[in-house]
Amino acid sequence: KAGVTQTPRYLIKTRGQQVTLSCSPISGHRSVSWYQQTPGQGLQFLFEYFSETQRNKGNFPGRFSGRQFSNSRSEMNVSTLELGDSALYLCASSLAGGFRSPLHFGNGTRLTVT
Amino acid sequence: GIQVEQSPPDLILQEGANSTLRCNFSDSVNNLQWFHQNPWGQLINLFYIPSGTKQNGRLSATTVATERYSLLYISSSQTTDSGVYFCAVPDSNYQLIWGAGTKLIIKP
Image (cartoon, rainbow over all chains, first blue to last red; front, side, top):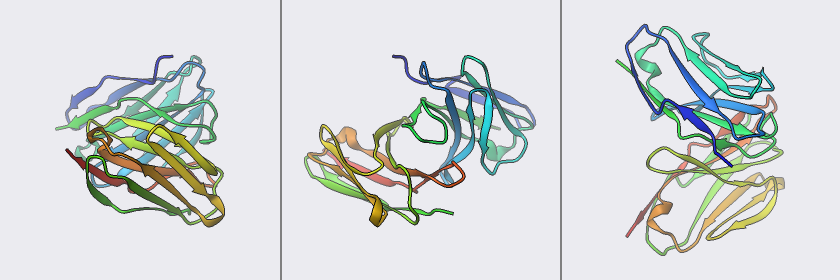
C-alpha cells in the first residue's frame, strides 16, 4: 500500500507570493490533516479535512487555507507569503477523523520564503 | 486545554543501551500516539495506544490512562533510533496536542 505522498518536497518562494502544497493520502483514508513545523514552535496543527469538509482548524491566519477533493487528496494554500512561513509542512492521513485512528505522515514539503 | 509534557527533553546513549521516555498528560484521553522523527524530518507512527501495552520489535509502549501517562521503551538502541520522539493526544475539540519531544542521540 502506498504511503502518504506530498509534493513538492522543496519549495523556494519570495515574500508576497502564494504557494500550493499537495497531499495524497493512503488509499482508503478519508481524513487528511496538515501541520507546520518550525524549530522554535514545534508541530502546530493547521486543519483537518474529512470527506471534503473541514472539521477543525488551528490558530493560523486566514492566509492559510485548504481543501479536500472527492478522491481524498488535499491541497493547502498560503497566500501573501511572509518570512515566518518558512517551515516544514507535514500532511497526515488516517482512516477515521477526529484523530480516532493512527496518523500516518508524508515526507513533508520544506518551504523557504526569501 | 490539555497539556502534554515529555521527559527527558534530551537523552544521549551508547549503542546497545536501553531507554525509557515518558509522556504525561493533564486530562483523560481516548488515545495516545507515539511518533519518531528521524534526522531527515520523516515522522513515523510507532504506536497507537489508548491503554495497555504494545510491542513492536525492540520498542514497546505502555499507557496508564487512569494515571495519565505513557512510557516508550527502547531496548538495545541502534544509531538509527536517533531522532526526536513525540507523543500526541486528542483534546475535546478534536485537535491533536503534541508534546515538545525527546531528542535521542545514540552514539556508536
